[in-house]
Length: 57
Image (cartoon, rainbow, N blue to C red):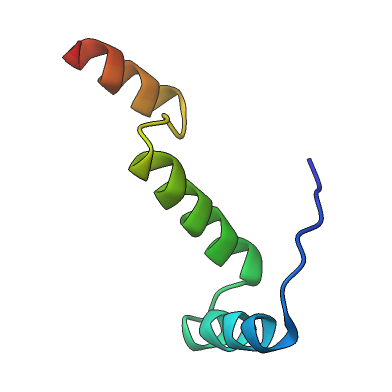
């Protein structure tokens, strides 16, 4: 699924530079950031995480 997210120019430039420094892509940074956000709020990122969470209960 494709969605648009708007960044201010300075933030976008810093994200592009970070991606270059890590020899990755902006998409990889976004995937990592959103996975971390979901984990922080206790939302399973994928089926494996959901199964682990349900097994703990």
